[in-house]
Structures are given as structure tokens and as C-alpha cells.
Length: 429
Image (tube, helix red, strand yellow):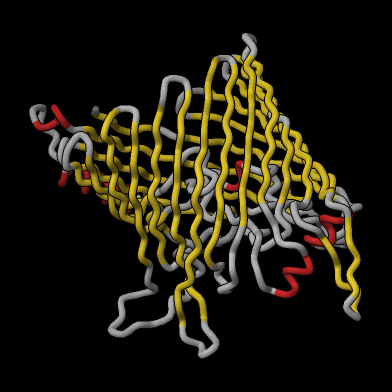
């Protein structure tokens, strides 16, 4: 409560509330509480024999402050993430405490040019390369600076950079945080009458320890784009990216990504679609040799959104892998305040899966990794309160067991139930 009180004091002290002063100013103070129950029996990986399901309740709590004027904008998001029971009732402090999810300022030079700097979410297009990862209770934000150029209503250009260090020092020290050391990117988006085109170039620098134990930075380059087309009730999108340069192990990187999806909406608010996604991979033998890396890496995307909600692929795992081909059939039905989604997936490895048998021999496996069915339902009580839940089932194969371990014959499923409160305490636009 003290932190909430102090935040109110900051709002009242810093920002003027006179009628004349607010003519060209906006101020919003909002919050969020999001408890979520999860039942995990084979979530992220095939459950091994002799293991029981996990169940817990996690919670995200946020306070958000946004201020804007003709000359600048300002945003802060305080956040606490916890698991119910991770501290006793008479606790003096939390396990994770309160963190700054966002803390940024934006200078507005003109209607066309602005500069945003500080801790902030970075999200573009379908969030495949850059995304806020809102599903996770902690979400993702970056310490970055972004120059934003808007030459007209149809065009957006962002140039961003990040430069990370572990602490203030007098001399150079190694960067040991599990993070990138630096990145630079440029994002271009052009909207046409019924279509849109985005182009992205990302130069990503990762820390690497050389043979003499000194730390260097190795760079990879990701470049490509995304095209969208809308002709109601038909929607289509396609993406392609290429990655080159070096991976974080200083090995040559050469990888590709391609995706396409088409959806069709019926008057009864039922939408069905067909999607396909390809992320190149490195064969098991090539991984053992630890040489050229052909595995595409969606570095900072909202990966939970893609390739099944059970997070077997690219959510904290599978980056240096045999790649993936994913065929999906998304189905959505809206009815008043309800939204239902059903998404079947069929997974295949993009590169050959093998297992070493010793003596230089390898056993090859089929590319079929299995299938997953995801279902979710959401009900909006109001604009500020909603309840949602879901169930997913993974039908794994022996090939997926070779890659992930566990026993593919076991049942692998995941269920969740979440209540979200997002009130706006004060808003002046």
C-alpha cells in the first residue's frame, strides 16, 4: 500500500491538474491483477515415468502510469510476479519483490519524429521476432532507445538499439547476464489500401568467451519481412526471414523462416483458417559436430503464440534444434461476450533426427513429432474484468521423445484458468 500511495503522490506532485494545463495533455493511471491456475502434466516437455503433475497459482500485479503532452510522453509500469505460497503469511519481503516492467520517456520533436528511451516493450507485426510475451506473468521488456519516424499516415519507420552492461564499473568486465549484449535494428511498415508490408533488419550481438577466456561479442543478422492482405471476409499473411552471421557459440549461422496463413470469416462470427510455418533446423549429426548452425531462432518474439500453447518449441527451449514444420487449423467462434478457440497442430522436424548408437553409427527416426490440440474459452464480464481458461493435449511420437526425453506413451496435457482485472483508476484525455 505504501508504494501505491507514493505513486499517487508522484502523480499529484509532478503533473499539473489545472483545467487550462490539461488541454493538450493526457493522463492515465491503471492497474492489473491476474491470478492463473495451471495443471501441468507434460507441459513444455514429455513427462517422464514416475513423475506426477504439477499444479499451482501464479499472479501478476501491475500499476501503470501514462502521461502525454505535445512535447513528450512518459510511462511507468510497476510489477510484482508471485506464486501463491512462495512466502509465508508473516513475510517481510517477497521472493521477487516489485520490479520495473517499463520506465520510459519519449521526446516528441514534431508530428513526424520522436525519440523513446528507457525500459520498454518492443512489439512489431505478428510478434514473431519482437513481442511483449504478455502470456507469461513477467512479460518481456528491453532497455533500449528507439527513433520513431512517421513521414505520413501510411508509413512507419523505427530505428532501435540496446547496449547492455552488468553494472557500473571502472574497467571492462564480462557480461554474465543471460541476455544479449547489444542489438541494433530498423523496422519499416507501409500500409496500402487492403494490404500491408513490413521489413525488418536486426543485428544481434551475443557475449562469447574465446579460447583465452576473454569475452567478445559475436553478431548475427536477421532480415526479412511480412505481407498482409485483407479482402473481407478473407485475410492472408505471409512472412520470410533469413539469419546469417554467427551464433552465440561463434559458429556460422545460416537459417531460414517462412510462414503463411489464410483465414475466412462467416457472418455468424465463425472464423476458420489454414496456416503453415517452417523454421529451418540442424540435423542431429551436425549438432554433434557443433559446426554450421542451420537452426532459425525467433529471438525476442511472443513464441507462446505460435507452435502450440504447450510451449514445446522455442519457449525457453529448442532454439538450437532440428527445426520445425507446423501445420495448423485455427478455428474461432464469437458469441456475445464469449470467444472460443480450437487450434489443432501437426508437427514435423525440419532436419533429420538421429541418435548416436556408439562406434560412429547413428539411428535415424521419422520426421513426425506429433500433434497437439489447443482449446480456450474467454468471457468478458465487462471492459475491465474477464475470465478465461483452456485445455491442451500433446500426442507425442518416439521422434519427439528422442529430442525431448521422457516417455512418449504417457499422456501429456495442460489446463489453466485465469481471472483478469484491468481497472482504469483515472483517465484524462
